[in-house]
Image 1 (spheres, rainbow, N blue to C red):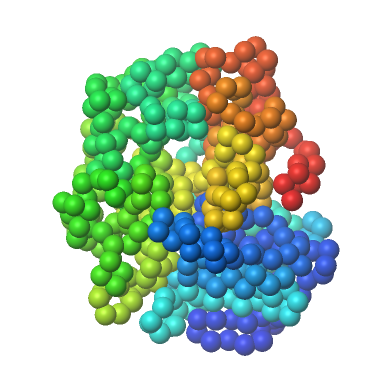
Image 2 (tube, rainbow, N blue to C red):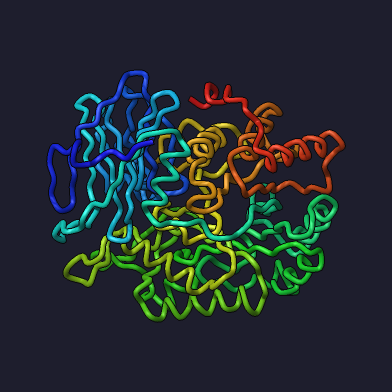
Length: 489
């Protein structure tokens, strides 16, 4: 392994941009880390392209904010063959040899890598905002060697260490019940899990427990006993209790837009519409002291009064879609703002466990215990043709498998990788047995956070045997088959 002197590759330089001469062969494979957890992030060949959203699809999706999940509202996609971009790190792989370029500091803004394979030109740009002066230094290192050598060297140079949380297995309610959970369904699934899971495993209650996203009050119709009763039930089985929240978001049907409109992040005087989930939702302004007080009280309630051990914090990108704006000028960059938002979450959660999701990965390095490193798995293989054109953050089991494999190097270095859930059940699912088996094996081999949404108490003897096989792979990391890469390319 050797470190490559960046100056030896430099064609041009400014305070916020480096232009390097970096060649690649037609047989090489390139990787560019996507904007956030759900952004498709697979290896590409030098003649592939990152296609922009089609104008018609963008126009139709504009009222629902379909472009707000990713970077295509602030990054210009050329769509040309051989032109790529990514965030925080990238690599060129020649067989087993990696040439890795990685940012060692995202606290002063996202580091964006633009590569033109035809011109052999790599531009490394510090995303400093829109109207402000570009005055943020680029801090990048380059290493050449084996996979482990270059990633170990990069994280050592960055001074980033994974937190001390242990790998986890368990259950989450989302990918079967979705938001149709109640005290009764949670109790049923808890009973089923207690037949298979072990003390110390995780039982996580996902979206659907609250009255509305942003209000974070228990839906008493669905959970008349309250959430502490659910936590007590989970703890009585010696499981860890987890709960889902989206702290930086407020649904349009929540009380916040009406009762606290000043809590919403505003751009040019208008609340920032961050996406179409839950009938549409807005970003909260993390600089508003009342927002900070509100969220601190939410976490105090969830973690201290109710007693949850882990929080899955979702849609985190909505904290920092724009640079900080004081009404006249943009201040700190998107990346700086996102890093500050992650610091706030760690402050509010203390030593409790955090599972990050829907989050730009660089600002999450070393801040969260667990992190989603791919898009949501689906109940089918690849979603519909229309959905596949909307953005690069769609629900897709096929994409999730690729994301899990190609971001595998972050596991145990930046955080513990969450590859999303696997499935064994036969009801309420469209995946074939072969697709379920492949997905589960990839999740077991390349992730250290291993959950299902099945009612495990309903497993047949054959399903239970499959579960034990996947658990063995998860523990030993000894599944060597790579033929699945041909399936997802």
